[in-house]
Image 1 (cartoon, helix red, strand yellow):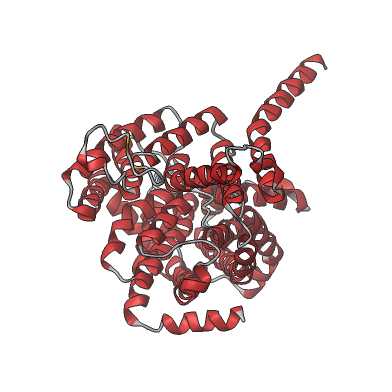
Image 2 (tube, rainbow, N blue to C red):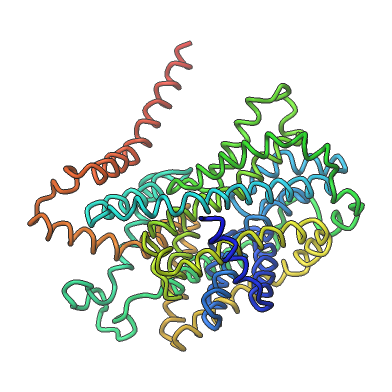
Length: 508
C-alpha cells in the first residue's frame, strides 16, 4: 500500500516547476553545506523565506532539497581542503583529506557521493514504511503522553552531544521564554509584550532562526575576516581531478558495500532519536567500521571504509529524523524544528493525522526527497569542479550575501521594520551565545515546541484536577518521563565515571 502511495507521489512530481524548485533546492543546499559555519539548520533558516511565494508542494520540495543538499555539500570542502562545511562532515575529513593528499580526490568525492546516495535511499525507504506505523501508534496519545514526549525531545536535544548540560538547558529556557511572548492560548491574555504592538502575535520562527543563525554568522564572519583555515584552494584541487576519477568501478563500490549498508542502518536509527542526528551517526559509524576492520591502523590515512560508512550514515539520518517529525509532529534537531515551523506555515499539521488529511502532499514530498537524492548524485560527481570554483568565488562575499538574505527574507514576511530590528537584536544574542559555546539548536526547538508543551501540560492538569501523578500513572507517559530523567542524570553519571577512571589511572 505504501509503495502505491509513493508511486502516486512521483506522479505529482511530473511538473516542470516542481522539478525546477527541487533542482534549485539541491544546488543552493550544496553550496551552503560546503561553506564552513552554516550547515543545514542555518541553510534552511536563511532560505525559508523563499517558500512564502510558492505553492505547498513546490515549497516543501525546495526545503527538502536544501536540507539534503547541505548534508551532501559539507563533504566537499572536508575532502578537498580539510575544512568541514558542517558538523557531520568532520568525520569525512578523517580519511577523505588523506585521500586527496594521495592524489585520489576525485575517487574520494565520487565514493562519498555514491555512499551518500545509497544511504539516503535506504533511509527514505525506512521513512516510507515506518511513518504510517508510527502515526497509527501515536493516535493513542493524549495530552499527558504528548507533554512527556515533548519534554523528553527538548531535554534530549539540550542534554546530549558535546555541549554542557547546563548550557543546553539555558538555551532551551531562552527558547521557551521566547515561545511565551504574545497571546496566552488558553486564557487569551497578553504575555511578555512590554506594551509593544509588534509582539502581540508572538515572535515569528523565521525572525528567531534567521537572527540567531544568519546574523550571528555574519558577525562571526566579519570577526574572523582575513583568517584562513584549511590547506589550499578547493577550486585549484578540483580542476586537477581527471574526469574519469569521478566514476568509481563497480568492483570499488561493491568492496565498500557492507560499510555503506551498516552506515545507512546506523544513520537511520540514530536519526530517529531526539538530540542525536547526523553528527552522532557519522562518529558512531566511523567507530564501528574501525572496530570491524582487519586493518584498523589504516583508518585516518585514506581508508575507503572510513569515508563510505560515515557518509552513508550522514544521509540515512535524514529519513530517520523525518519519521517523528511527520508522524508525531516532534522534531529531533534545530533543522527539524525549522521544518516543523515551515509545515505549519504552509497549512499542514504534523502529527498522526497528517498522512490521512494531507497524504497526497506528504507522499509527494517523500518522492521529492528521492528525486533530490538522484539530482544530488549527479551534481556531486559530474559538476564537482564547477561547485568547488563557485565556493571559492562566493567565500569573500559571504558576510554581505548572508546579511542581504537575512534582511530581505525577514522584511518580506510581514513587511515589518520592527521584525528586522528584532532579528538584529537576536543576531547579536546569537553571536555572544556562539562566543561562549552555547548550543543554538535548543533555542529554535524550544520556540517551536514551547506552545505545544505548555498547552498539553495545562490540559493534562485540567484533565486530572491538578494531580501531577497523571504523568507517572499512564504507561507511555511514564516511559518518556523516565527517559527524561535519564537524559538529565546521564551527563552527571558520565562525569563521575570519568573522575573515577582518572583517579584509578593515577593510582596505577
